[in-house]
Length: 160
Image 1: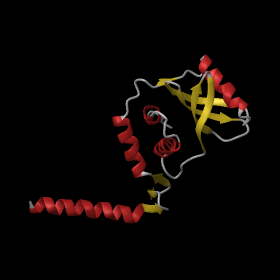
Image 2: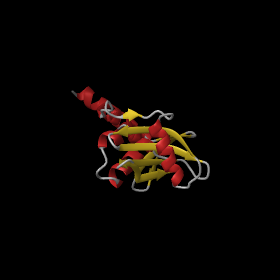
Image 3: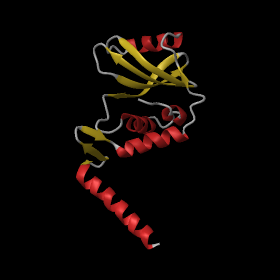
Image 4: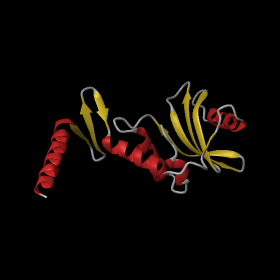
């Protein structure tokens, strides 16, 4: 029992040493590890891993970029007048979509769209990066918070 207590104390001491040597607090949002020239988001990594373990993506479809649905989404994005859209990925659950696209006159953006009566409506959008944090957990959290009625199944299946 005593040797177990000593081992736990050593492990906790080592973790604290790593934290104080390499951790950098970022506002109220959390912390990152800055080791050499690489930045790690340990909390984001754990969130991504746990998301992959518990999500169910069987009903979420990847929409082929050459499909008529993708062409209709491209037309919708073109109507936003941000430049010529270049779809990177589209995933779908029922009438909801998460679309990642680049534009000739604007930065890359991620849209949550809903199809209502054969027309697309933007329910939320994300532009830029979540750096220094992992993009996936931050963007999924943003979509969950900004679109309360959106299907969580679709949001959980989004990966960047």
